[in-house]
Length: 498
Image (tube, rainbow, N blue to C red; front, side, top):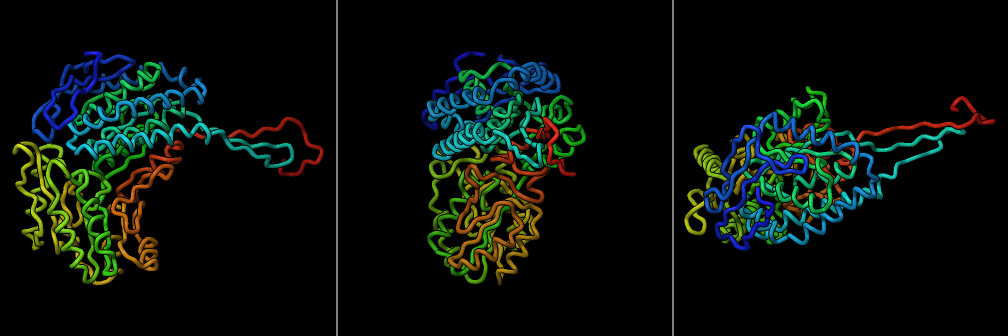
């Protein structure tokens, strides 16, 4: 594999790229079996590179490299570990445009969204850097002559399995806390967008991270199962669909490792008649169609409470103006086009009204994998479009007569990722937020993603495991607490507590 991994594109023009191999022990290496898979550019609908496809043997090699590197990295003072991440931040900022265009080409995001992917990753990295000032430990004289203290110790070899929709940001939900804590790490990126992880590996190398501390293993189900099963991997973080999150969590737990697995979503936006028309309509459109709806925080179901038809009309008008290729990118592959189109057809057969139809949409040049903005009205909560995660540019609208009826619909969802209320009434907002069955809530916010240091994570079938993956919870997940109680001499005024 060439040492020059620079991605030259600075436009949407089709640009071939280098093969993507595994990064193990400080070396680029193909899989043991020699298998590979084409990597599609969704905008053009054709392969612009190849990724190696790995199995259990490759995971075992990565674990060996990470195990060998662990003692040295664990014993490196945290102030020195953090210096590597300081340098990584500088390198990410230096290469922002290159990384953004790479994300756009492998994922399909329009360039503004791709830049946001990288910038949000940098923000997560900044929080990880700050942890050096937060993990000094806690201590207290709990009795006469008795002191208790706590430190956060690394687990060893850890692993992360990440999805296709944010190739740079989601890995950086995990890496800063895990690496600052003194762990070594194996990252399994989505095989359809492997290049963001490849560039992170190369930039960490340039930043001075010792060989073996960070490794990448590319592949599909075989690699995921090998990570879940390997006895020397102590913790696994996962982001993806609920079906796979549940499977990875169960399999990892059965192997005796801790796991925190973020699953799917069916986010609800409640809109009541007093909601501000322009604020609500523009915000709902941005939430539903940003990143072509391919994000777990997308507004996929709007509950229209009472007469909010003027707001719905404005949503349709704004969505109709979105330009494919400029305001909204393609979906990830042809299979996604078919799946999303089937949801729209099924809802129409079941009686939903198609206010805006994105089926058959064409992007620039008439190539690629496209679904246009779609709005389905009068969807019933039990329709697949009303209760399943579509993961595409489809907004389903369910009608409710009262706020309590709307809350009952939201509460009945199997998911619990995010929910928002659009209103100008503080009382209504508080009433709803206190009753939402969701881990991330918003008021007049279409994408209620908490900014660092507040942690990211949902409830119910949107999350398997305890805690959240980012923020302070992330540090606690990748560490184990050592509690120490000390006494150096018998106190003259000792009590039974001593």
